[in-house]
Length: 463
Image 1 (cartoon, one colour):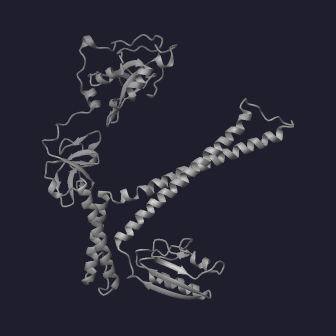
Image 2: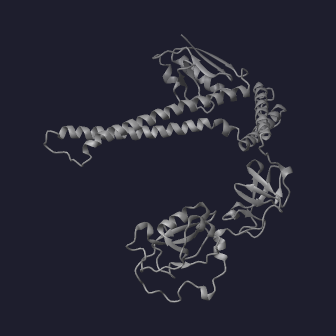
Image 3: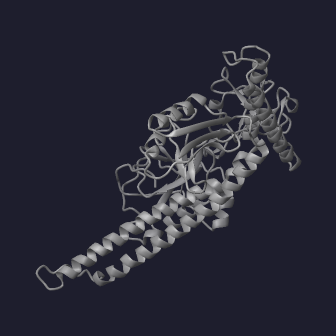
């Protein structure tokens, strides 16, 4: 029987005419084929033939197929080799098929995940049912007539639990695969990714046009009469038109595509969640203060930063918004900075005793756990203070409510609590309360204290 090796852009590289046990599989499975010369052929039950992965919609690497044909001939097979790189499908048709296959994978993988989850639950239930026999802590009675049965039950219980864990892991794996397949189209058509893809495709098209004119591109030259250049030019033109239409559709739906015309020097640009002042407007990006200046800030201006002499470029495809200088409010310190910069209390309101307090019993000792007293303190990412900054004393239950409220945390600070703060004056100190969190306390119905007495204890980390 003759083995037929064919390649077209429409179908990829296919091998037909082989049969099980004829010795061709050992040759086809060698990882020495394809454009990378590291790919093996694979068998497809749907196609009922061998195929080379990722060979569709690409020109073939002819020396690789010639090497394969020669190896099959040396093994005694009659081989024909047919290559037609001009036979191709349009890019839109190819992309539509890829999206349909991604939808099919999402549905199929979702079924795998559901099946594995059911199996995991069944095996767990099986193990649990067996364990009921030993719920009271009955040990294996050595030498008793029940010993062998008890050991078999332990083995069955262990095997069922192992299967349950394995099926649970498989369910998580297939759930992730299903989610990735379901997100294929959304990620592929993301405006930022699409704009970056268009930049690369246009650069590739310019290189092909240079080669067709007999010029050098990408560091080397090609034969202007090579028919592959004509095919590649058609492919790139179709692909660029396809993605440009995707961008037009996104703009019609309200997506803003930023460009040089949208910015002037002194504007503010939203880049990766932070507003930066625009230092210079470039054809493909805006120059902004370096991103290292954004730590703990919502707005980064041109001056007044740690690294004023450093700059960064934000490409337009990664920009999320624009404001004029008048629309940006004057820089405001975050809550942590406000706590640090608040006025110091007057002497007659000073709550910290001038002398070290006499150690007495911890107010929380002997009380219910949730009603024991703890200290609520400020933890700031940029603080270099050697002492903890304590705001209030309150019950553990109230502290959990206050610290768990999203309004008590920001970009660079958060509230936390501890029942072992260490020694006052050495490990922690009271910090002024500027009242910015009074609405939170009011909503939660919490009345804090500003005094604390505790027995000496070793410093401990906050909860």
